[in-house]
Image (cartoon, rainbow, N blue to C red; front, side, top):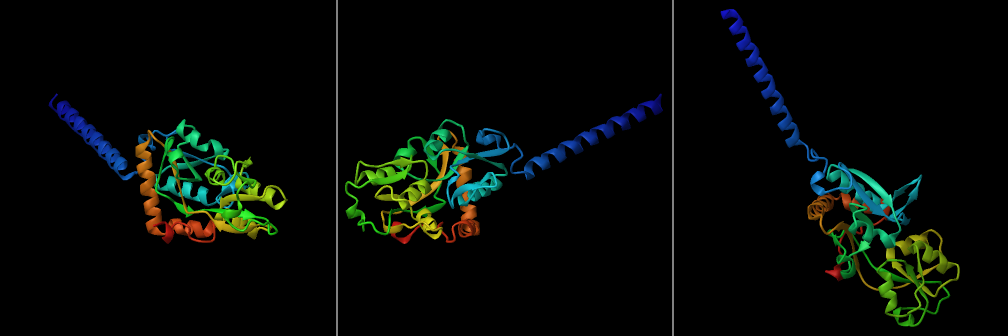
Length: 272
């Protein structure tokens, strides 16, 4: 009987040691993983995944290749997701509806070259800028438009939902809106419209790809940033932290040079 009691005692003792060992192991595992809760604190569409929107029609920032979106915006979104320990999930959408999609929870974030504006800030929050650019006037080489002074009452085409609509409205009421900046520039080169206002980098890329258009002057400097829903401040803070780390490490500039050819991540001197 005495031997039976001793055997039971040791059996219980071993069970306790095993339980304590498992508990300690689980605690250590949870502490070492940044994404141990699969990003649930961010109120994501799907745990463990960062669903981001882009247009796929804004080369070299986002465009289609082999059935998926690639470009600078896409690379930045994927780098942010990696910093957050999440899987990046891309969603192609019409540019004009992306901000509304973020606001309504169809996408966790938008990395789609959105310029920070007061109008958009009423719907979503924005991260720190991940690149800087500016609107430029483009015309055909034979155009008599030489500067912004010559835009009065001209037909100026812009991409639908872009900030360039407001820019163009300062000069004319005749503003045909199309699905993308590239479509507007292609139409311009074919003889339609008097001018197009679009991003300087997009215009320069179009020229390098053979479109017969010319730069007739820049209209300012703009800041492009990641859009996040207003009720997701935790995610916004983490996106900002990720961008800060990407800038400080030089990774963001590296991505810009890879996809754009130049570093566009530094604020221009004239804007400071």
